[in-house]
Length: 247
Ligand SMILES: [Zn+2]
Image (tube, rainbow, N blue to C red; front, side, top):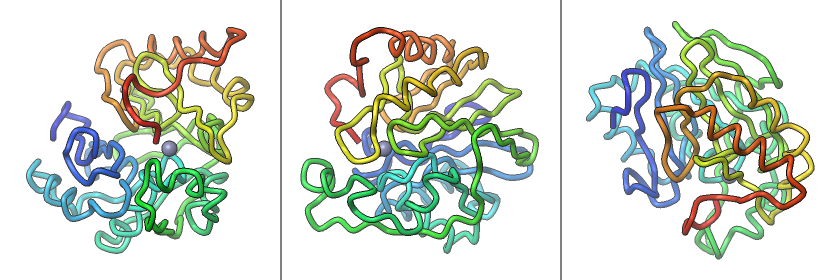
């Protein structure tokens, strides 16, 4: 589904766009190529391919899939797209080992299986072709992407900023209205959130595309600033979306 000239959403279980376990999966228009942001939970690949074609996009023009963090609903679809489309996978240098070979405990699946994932759900590991560090920038077609690591949801969770356009993909780091993805599973901690959330200040973000619960096309920076402000208060900040289960 086309959101803007630059961004399409091709998967999301919450909106019924694809399999129930898929996070929001976006395509970023980089001129001569498309970049996929996150890959869903591994069962929605064919549905998403159909959505891509319905949007008039040639799946062969997708060159990369960026995995914002190692959780199953974002990373487990990467193997399907890597193999089917022959594209490179990109992940943070901290979460990449989890994507490739993390244990259920390291991935939080030991606690998420049952309440979130089916009891027989199995993580699908994928080779990561390119590991990126905090602050690293990559040129993709006509876009310059900066990777901003904000550990706290997972040890190496990251946001992806399309610098010149003021477009940010936040995965499960921050959602609309500045709620954060703090959870009660291994790898999720408040202290690294508190230490790193300031990296999202002053980015001049216009459009904010989180991994769940919708997006905003105006004044995305205000939503990020709210998260930064909440994490300066001496209270546990608001988390997740209202009336939505945690992912
Ligand atoms: Zn997550």
